[in-house]
Each structure stands twice: as C-alpha cells, then as structure tokens.
Length: 155
Image (cartoon, rainbow, N blue to C red; front, top):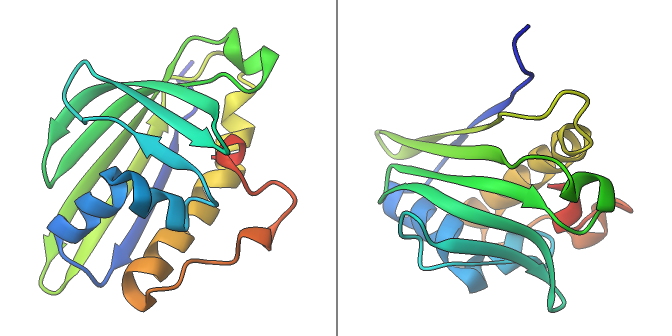
C-alpha cells in the first residue's frame, strides 16, 4: 500500500530568487506563515525550527538545498504529543521558472500509517501557500484570523 502524500502546485508572479527568499528568510516567513518564523541557515544537515511567539512548533532537518530551485527538509511536529511520536515526514519544494511566473510544487510525504500530522498539514498548507502567493504578488498576506487554526500547527 502506498503511503499518502500531499502535493500542492501553484503559480506565482515572482522570480525564483524572490520565492527562495520568501521560503527561507525568517522575517519574510513570519509575514505570510500566520506569524510563524522559520529559522535555519538552510544548509544540508542543518536544523530548522518553526516558531510562534517563541515556542517551537516543528523541528526539521534540511535534507536538500539548491538555491533557488530545490529545498527539502524532514518535518516533525512537536507541539502535539501524538504527532511528536511519529517518524519525521518530508517536505520538498520545487521551484520552476516559466517566463515572468514561477511554478511552485510542494510535496509533503513519508507519513506514518494513521498519521495525525497528515490531516493537520492538509488543512494548513493550502492556507499558507495562498498567503505566500498573495504576499509576493500584492505585498499583503492573508489575514491571520482566517481560521481558528491559523498557526504553525496547522501547516
């Protein structure tokens, strides 16, 4: 049986370099990721944390970093006792230029059978990526009160 995956594709009017910055710059991530900050030096093997209000929500390890086209990291949600017990899943970004737009493919995979993380990210990723697209194209992220579940824990 194939393990479930989450795949999301969007097109953004930006450059690969600006999108890479948006995905990896701590201050930038806080703007569109519902007040969460992603912190890392983005080198393979480095740790990456997702924090909200000083609390670590997710602990990750960078597994691939090829600026500005590919980025991947192992993901472990630590804010929830059930999720913390799961093996890490894997997030991959593929950035492909198409003229004056960029195709962004986000794949989140390698979930444990019966994963508690999969339903959480299935809710959160579309919201985060829509906010990222809005922020890059208009300078305004989606409002953080979009839902009762608008935090790092939802994506």
